[in-house]
Length: 65
Image 1 (cartoon, one colour):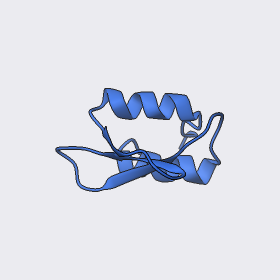
Image 2 (image 1 turned 120 degrees about the horizontal axis):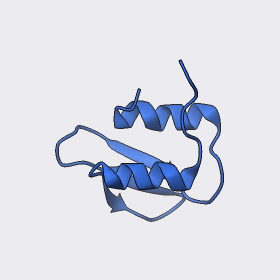
Image 3 (image 1 turned 90 degrees about the vertical axis):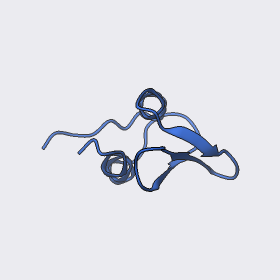
Image 4 (image 1 turned 120 degrees about the vertical axis):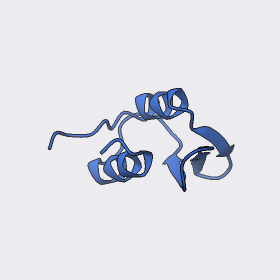
């Protein structure tokens, strides 16, 4: 299995392009939700790259892997 995207900007762009909406933007995370999918995805605020494990967790929750 290849590596997952770790760039925060690209992760946010892909989530929004796939219909994930910002539910909450307070604290240390932006929380995304989707009308047709179950669950919420917390994405850390900031810039740069995420640790591989965090990026993998977001990718699993979004259905990318």
